[in-house]
Image 1 (cartoon, rainbow, N blue to C red):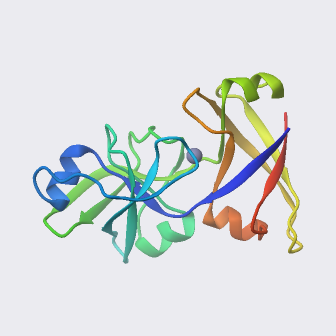
Image 2 (cartoon, rainbow, N blue to C red; image 1 turned 180 degrees about the vertical axis):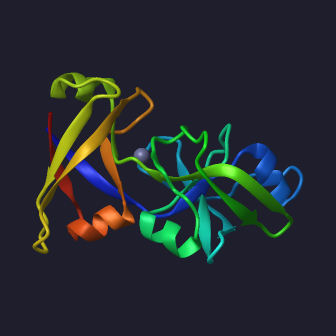
Length: 189
Ligand SMILES: [Zn+2]
């Protein structure tokens, strides 16, 4: 099955508690742009993420979540001086520490920094068509128009009726691939 491949740049998700510490009591996220996953959006709000070696300003993605989570590439992690284990979104126990700075306050996090494990969001209908289920590990064969075609292994399948079918890679992975404007991969088991 052919799936759309999208690149996720560094970003963070905030809990309501941390949102209010960083941006002020009762603050609500401001939608800048809706994303391809239903209900998900890029926000106007930006947060400075600080590690032992440097800092990067990152966009917040909404809506708010149960836990604050910072998603970076391994290149970002190195320049920040933070640990970023490769994890699925939401699996943050024991992940990297950092400090967040917003216009109204600061949060010292003991965990929450990850490099997102590459994954394919799938609707139940598409997963059935492709013969895969939630948590399956697949490969993605991707043709690069710029001479960097490659196959990604260890791609985790995530199935939910609330998803649109699309694969997500980070900016390091995208740079390794040098994709064209619109990029599709062939998913194989
Ligand atoms: Zn994703």
